[in-house]
Image 1 (spheres, rainbow, N blue to C red):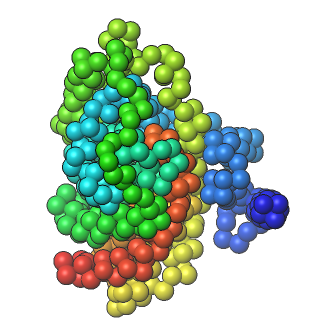
Image 2 (image 1 turned 30 degrees about the vertical axis):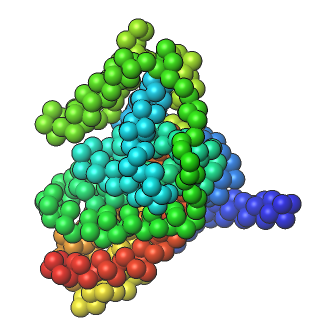
Image 3 (image 1 turned 45 degrees about the vertical axis):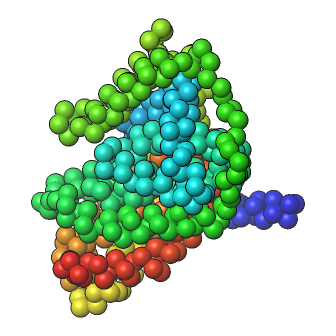
Length: 464
């Protein structure tokens, strides 16, 4: 343990030294000020990835360094707090607390248990299918997690999976990844998809159809990747459902969790779901719908979330982390560092007309690497403006070049890249670090197995 701690100290000292060097010394290819931005970004990413400090502290360090050295304005640094994502998370915590406090999660788990309790594999597969189905109905990954995670945790309780057990962690990880990864292949379901679609239309006048996008990406990046997630969880978090009946209910339903209260919460959630599903018709952002739902659930007499429950359910540290991740992506983009890194990779990658396999792999890898630095929502913002040059270098159509971004931003190595993953694990009450045990081998399998299959699928549909 001492040796591990010593290596951590040595590694962090090396990272800090590298960051100071980037900030103070001129770096070839980087404009004035970009070296300092790169230094702060590098330090923050390492802190998030290694867990050397808590994620919210890493965000505070990022805020402080960025503002003290004048790398960005306060408006940009704190823009994350005004983003829809942060307020959707706040409302998500309140909705999750209402589902738990009312006993609705346990009631729904009781209804689902006979269908899923046949085996651990059946339960994980069923929850993954539920998350995938919800991806077609609800345009928010946080919203999907808010609905499914409390039910999944209630199911874990019914199966006797205690906090920290493999079974409970496995359910949490499947729901976290299931509410996020397959829906990257559904055009309106995740934020990066919509950023890509909007940027492609605004900059290049290229429009993606819902069906074309779905048929191109969902069979491999949706269905096959979801199957790999379940297989990896079964392998790395093995467990068995105890035979001989259900475990005792950890939160017996009493006066505070009556059927009337559950019906009231269910009605509020049903209206919320309908409004989330029809956002394209009424134009109200899902975050503001969630905020209104949170207000109703907090109102005296009408709501079910007491002030004390609100204080314990909303994790301010998580909000700081998410705001920091959003600000980091904005800083990378606004400073020009993202575009600079993209151009550098453009020069290094072996792009050449006629070498379709190598071009496809290179463009996909370029998107993966960009997501490590700019976070996943920053990938389309950084790479979309470069699409014409990449199309010329590779000999591929601009639509094909743009679509390769989806492979990259749906390949997640670390939880910090996709804030909703961390939110889902927080809702489950399990450590986000458990995700890395799945995300790293999943990324490797994606590059080694799914990427070649995806290439063949694209050729079959005439995209290459």
